[in-house]
Image 1 (spheres, rainbow, N blue to C red):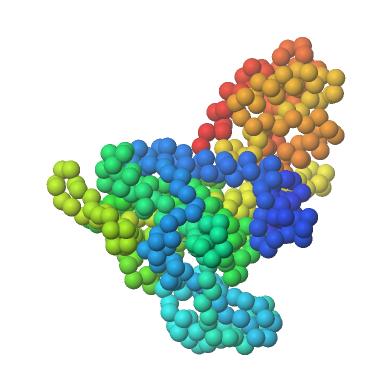
Image 2: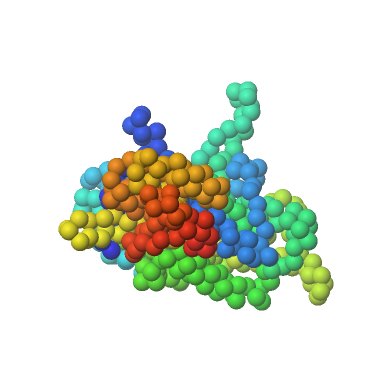
Length: 455
Ligand code: ATP
């Protein structure tokens, strides 16, 4: 892949897509702020996901659960006891790494360390002589556990404050609402609960821009099903996940499915989809068969029965869970990587184009008056179209420069308003990718664009 992370980061910074968090104070490690262009792209990614997985599936119900949850939730999920990453420090250069990442990077994603014990990971690293990726030495500390949950407290009196956690994953918000949703929506198994929301992890080795951050958004769903149908549903979500990415214009060559051979003790199957990010193949999303583990644990810790009564067969059982989850920020990085293109133009110039699917482009159209004294007509068009979708208005600089600016942020169509427009009410529409131009009556522009931005 020719695009480097540096090129993406620079484009994001200079074109209002993503800035370093708290930049004027020297930043705050691995936090990022989405700018005016970035927030549109990310919102469109979330909308496309919600449309595909919630709106178009009558058996999926959305929720927006609280970030702060009763701490008992994290006892039930095992996070208070086990949610820690295996860290190793290089004694030579003092850099800190995750042992599982060292193994996965060294094996180029072929070996999954997810279910390995610390001893197994230490042995693998030693047997394969995995050196420090930073300084090249083999001088590791033993593995130590690094707590991943952010803690805060509630209560106003010192000494009487209770610890609460910023949620490290969104899915617990679905499990704790299983009974509420089943009852209030009269939902029948199999059904799913979906959510998009923020999660927080005190990651040891955040980095690679927005790939791994300490605060991020997850888009995920939990499908509650009967054990007998669970593997079909698991495979269905693998296929849905793939199709979603291909429909967003991902090339199949840049995706790899990795089935885990070692599983968590409760899991029956797990698959990660890897994407060829600028730094190499890395996890983009996961599909997991979690058996009845999650609801059983919540039944045990809350004392509330999670049994589902099948209205047809009268069977009672705790549903099995199939989880599909993807990070919105990680997908944003993948989308930017996939869309970033540099093209040689006639005359030797190069243009940067973000070839985003029109549905996730930040602005759907740019209105560009060719001369300043005809901008009234252009403003009128902007006012009409901006009632329907995000539009950009730009009257500064040569038309060539204005096209380049739109290309760089992925605006799929540019409309130029010229003197002929005043005479015959037609405008020129330019396509971002082909650079071809056609002439259209001004009142057909809205329909023309609307048809092209459907996802
Ligand atoms: P990783 O192994 O990369 O840390 P994970 O297996 O812990 O990821 P999950 O807990 O399964 O990830 O989370 C589901 C999805 O959420 C991931 O596939 C990824 O897209 C996203 N995600 C997880 N952690 C982060 C993070 N720190 N920053 C950004 N996105 C994340």
